Length: 256
Ligand code: NAI
Image (spheres, rainbow, N blue to C red):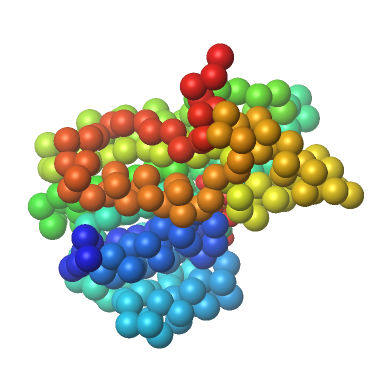
């Protein structure tokens, strides 16, 4: 029970990578706050964790809303007395070239993927400092490191998350707050399946198989495989790691 006594917040924790992370943290003894805008999925997951003896709280919130971001921190402190760990995972994805992306879509993607990380961290970092330190993991993407045609706003938002991670790591260092970033590749979640449907509406499974062939490991990643990297970075095992950008991408980033 590596995280016994710790209090963790996972944004976008109702499904996919965030859900796998929240479940792994709860299994390892942490009290987990799942902050997500999907009310039905969030309350069902929290009820499930509490039913098997874990400690979980649902906060229905939009990370891109300042009042909601403040509420995530406040409700966590009210329920569990403080905050030790934060996983900024909530994210959305929509394709678009620099010309086909409307200003509205650009702002929506930047607001959730980048401003959401800023806002939630802004309210959580004072609480980590009050506990004498803590750890944050931001979930970016390989699209923040390398580009692909047709993903302008998403790539920019994730590149911003990588840069923000480094800035947060430096700002938090004196207070014992470590901040790192995970860049997933092609992970089998509803987000990737929606992407596959856009590419091949008739046969999304064929698009998913094509994604898998693009990775050196020859398969999609699982949400649990990304959660494992996140937990490692949150844990004292990674006590000397801060400001790092770690890929979990089946080798995509290694290839020329
Ligand atoms: P997903 O779509 O399965 O889950 C995302 C969760 O975030 C959902 O529960 C959704 O309700 C929540 N969410 C979305 N916008 C929100 C908001 N404004 N406020 C609160 N909650 C919100 O997605 P997945 O695949 O688990 O993605 C998680 C993170 O990993 C995202 O940041 C995504 O960009 C990133 N990622 C995913 C990859 C993949 O292949 N699945 C690859 C690279 C990065």
